[in-house]
Image (cartoon, rainbow, N blue to C red; front, side):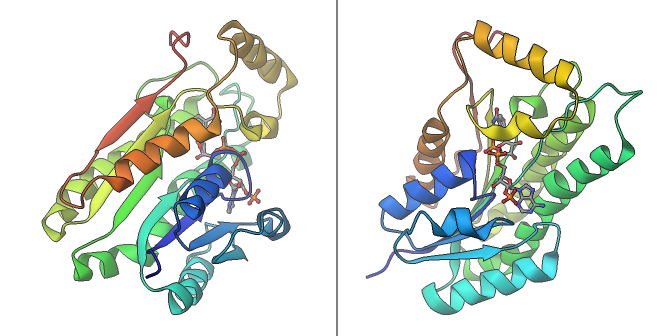
Length: 240
Ligand code: NDP
């Protein structure tokens, strides 16, 4: 019998791509969502649908998830991973960058949640894993709005967890420290990027994306009546 459908946003790169590979290797059909469809299709995973979707577009998210559910059955796990980190000095950063982070990191998580939550509650099963960050638990220089979006992901996950617990739906938050991915590349300030990279070298680089996939797998494979509420993970040498 085919295992249940796993939906991953931000599946075209970094951590999200690792989630797709991992859950696929465990035998799950996977819906991969991100704007760049070709990169996802190149993986050629079995029982996998790749759709170019902007996570801020609720109707596009709903349509892609419906298409995957018609093929593979209801979504049992949604991983909201799409996100961007645009670091900046508060007085200099463009409003547009703030706005984009709020749209993708917060509204994107909400769009995914909207597309599956009511149905999961009606079925009394299902899991949503939201990818926040250590920047969702404490603040860092040049991270103000990024931190704001990740604090929001923590707050939304924690409050929703309470409200859906009676329906047997699990809401999990994973909060990683630095991970080796292209995340930093979209920051516009070269100075901030250089400083970040120096700091990263001082802790001998970030975690491997596969280590975050291990965390998601650990939380998911527990019985449905056990909710691993939060996993915080970082390089041992990351002191902050
Ligand atoms: P990457 O830059 O490698 O991946 C980001 C992913 O998000 C890409 O697949 C990108 O796809 C997708 N994405 C961005 N904007 C949109 C959009 N509007 N619609 C749909 N998809 C979008 O970064 P990571 O893998 O590192 O980041 C994944 C998550 O992990 C993020 O939420 C990040 O905040 C979090 N995180 C990362 C850490 C790190 O150190 N790397 C640490 C802690 C948390 P595309 O461009 O094709 O749309």
